[in-house]
Length: 238
Ligand SMILES: Nc1ncnc2c1ncn2[C@@H]1O[C@H](COP(=O)(O)OP(=O)(O)OP(=O)(O)O)[C@@H](O)[C@H]1O
Image (cartoon, rainbow, N blue to C red; front, side):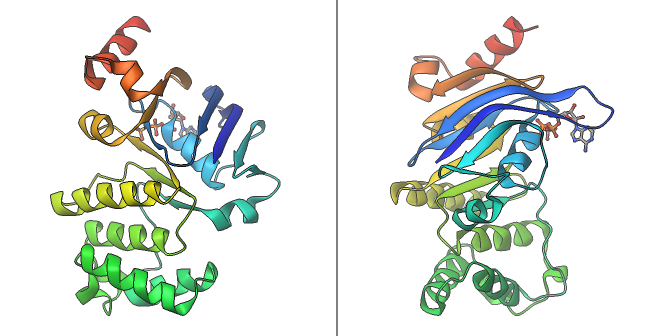
């Protein structure tokens, strides 16, 4: 569903932010992308989402290149940045319908999903209010619902649990599981190792722009915890 081949990114006037990164995310995977501050997670995620240009390597989504077929790729994926930038002057429901129009989601499906997720995330009662009046967490919930409107084959999330209240976090995890059970794939970055350990079947650890560990969670951690694996990797790589 997602294949990254020899991806590197250098920002103008800086050293390489990501170097020669390779990884694959299959349908049904919940793939956690872990690393310290400045490791290169957001850079990679933005390149996958098609919002950051890059010169080296290739990124394929559903076997299509994000560089040469960005529209085809964007039709089948959704991206939730760490700080969603929504159209603040719209109400929640106007925004969701706008996204539904862009992705050409049939009205019945759209209404069903808006009702289901709006009720689950307890934001239906605020749908009529302008997004500018929402709290950070409420904006995140609208961003999550908008990402689920077209049932993406690939969902990309950057630090999705930051700012969500405990109930919304639990719901998001359930929703991620449900989406994967229906055959989608999820790739997300996080600093919260406990969440990644419970939620992900696969992980990758990135350090200083280079992938240092990648694979199936069970095989990688064995009887240990993800936290101890992470500390081992970080210490070893010093
Ligand atoms: N727009 C930019 N211009 C120049 N350098 C950048 C830019 N964005 C990121 N970088 C640099 O690229 C490297 C990787 O940053 P990135 O934001 O991808 O890390 P991250 O793993 O997402 O970090 P965090 O966990 O803090 O969000 C860092 O050295 C950062 O300073």
